[in-house]
Amino acid sequence: MSKGRNSQQAVQAVLWRLMLLAAVLLSVAMLWGCGKSPEKEADTKTSDEDKIVIGFSMDTLVHERWLRDRDIFVAKAKELGAEVILQIAYSDSQEQEKQVQYLLDQGIDVLVLVPHDAVSAAGMVKKAKDKGVKVISYDRLVKNANVDLYLSFDNTKVGELMGEAAIAKRPQGNYLLLNGSESDNNSAMFREGYMSLLDQGIQEGSIKIVGETWIKDWLYENALAYMEDVMDQNPQIDAIIAGNDTLAGAAVHVLTEKRLAGKVIVVGHDADLDGCQRVVEGTQSATVYKPIDIEATKGAEFAVAMARGRMVKANDTINDGRFDVPYYKIEPLLVTKDNMMSTIIKDKFHSMEDVYMNVPKDDWPTK
Ligand code: GAL
Image 1 (cartoon, rainbow, N blue to C red):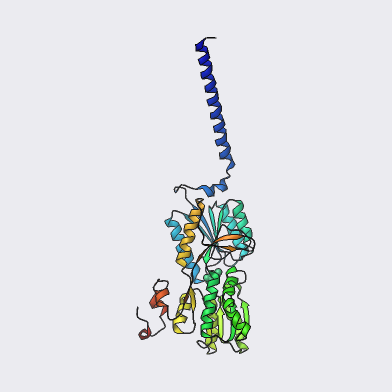
Image 2: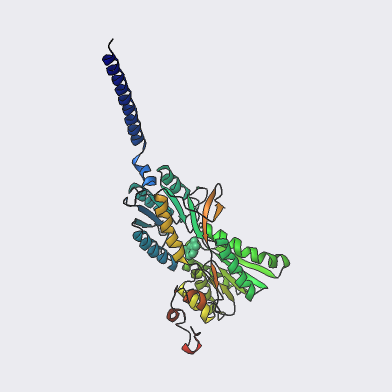
């Protein structure tokens, strides 16, 4: 067999092998392509051109802060080139369930969830995770669900600051506790915080809890009804710890009717405008300022990063009842009459004109 023929055969053999290799590579690529269900596409929108769609499921807009969360979050997400589909459940878990399903059906890349009910929301998280959609538990933790990230304030510290403020004014006496909504895990974290400050006084007998309740859906009217009931029995109350400024407002309303406003200590949280007004007017001793702009901005940034399959660095973990999940927690601040200017006004959370609206101009602190 001639030399020429040999080399021809050799060339043919090499060509065969190359074609075989090409065929193998092609089939692997095709196999890789078919393995990815459209839903799982979410995790890998790596290029900035791919428009990210965020599903933002909120419990309510009834309380002042949520309007701020919504506006800052949506604006930041837009700035980052993402689209936000917003759903508000108005404190109805079934409605929230339907809304989350609707968001998933829209093909969202990431779910940002403010649960109405910390326990039943776990089902919504499971649905999202089954579709490969990442989940951020926003401000309130979903229990037993292993969310990808819990973003909130240090809520136990929020409660500690409230406890500190009350004890500073009333180290002894009868306390009334208006806890937040029982379906909201934050209420338990806040309570854990203020009880850790009250416990010593309770042990020693200098502090007595003469009444305690959980206010359904954090609603003003529910707190008002409870307060009217309690005060009609003319109990001797020295201090009220109210889960947030909405509940504190209801307490002060009833105390005012009884000419006890400013005499009975009231502590709230959220630094709502009316809460801050009561603090500078003296009918409420303190509130807790949570810089919502940080939480909402981080929320949008983290949502876009996670939708692009990027890792988000948390600064703590929290056990959700079954799993230890990453927790990005932000510091809260106690606000009293003395530091209103250097916190709320300095940060432009509210304007001086609004906060001191009912205070004679001569008594306004200098800027
Ligand atoms: C809590 C939240 C508070 C409060 C409340 C009522 O979860 O942390 O800021 O406003 O809900 O919506």
